[in-house]
Image (cartoon, rainbow, N blue to C red; front, side):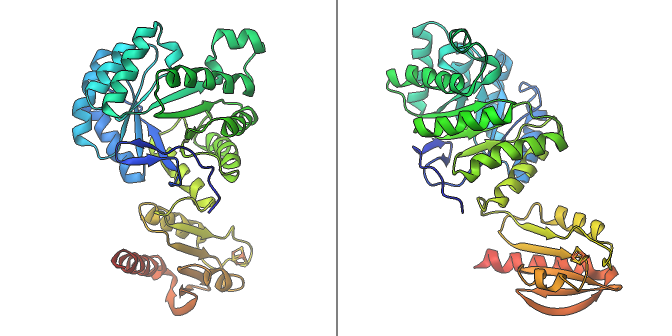
Length: 357
Ligand code: SF4
């Protein structure tokens, strides 16, 4: 595990973000929030994929009203994304929201900010301050000339200051930019000055392929520094893909305890089995497993057995067949056509034993 930067722990529903807790995976619904049926269905799909906190836009009264019904039918904390309108924040809080994403400096008059803060205090709900390089305050753009990492950190400190002045400390902060080096710099500087948990994200990172690479480069650099208590991968794709990428990224750093990992080789001229098809099928199969097992799928018996032995369960291809390994021991040879099914049975057995102990 990479050492996490210690932050103040913040409760969101029944989860704790920050402190020494695992990095929490978030996503955001693409549905109209007022469409309860569609929103709940999307959230349930996200839950199944491993999403731990989900955000919905609350951009009108109907969306705020829908929170109550959505909350009854989902199992993970729900966050309201609000811009400017304090009445929508109050309505979302009243209807049972678990966290509000709003920038206090954008709410307007002091009494409006106080009402939102007071409502959050009464329900013990945190506020996420979401700094975005694309929407920095005018006074910062005048000071810095254009968006910079320092301007982003100053913006975060500005909003934090407003909340702290009202004796509110239940805070999470994000500093998102689509420019990866700027985001890394902003988060790195913020981690040195801000004691609250940081929510990581590279905003508007793009499509599934490009956005995965961009987000992984930026968020991965921060995770390697021990920065970040929660994250969202933002993709122009089905949000379930965001969860898959987030889980894979956290696995890379040993920061997730409820995910199975697949090791598979790139193949070469020594390949003796249809490895791409097998690897994809096994990857899909283990994607919903919530225990930390390691599965290897390797193409040949030259390097394969050595690698397969490192995994809990693995196969190495041979001509028309495969060698099945469990905890470092070769347990049997299996004809190629039965290989995937036999591997799945062994995976199920390992998961069953893991869950029973
Ligand atoms: Fe090639 Fe075998 Fe290595 Fe796969 S495991 S890359 S097939 S040598």
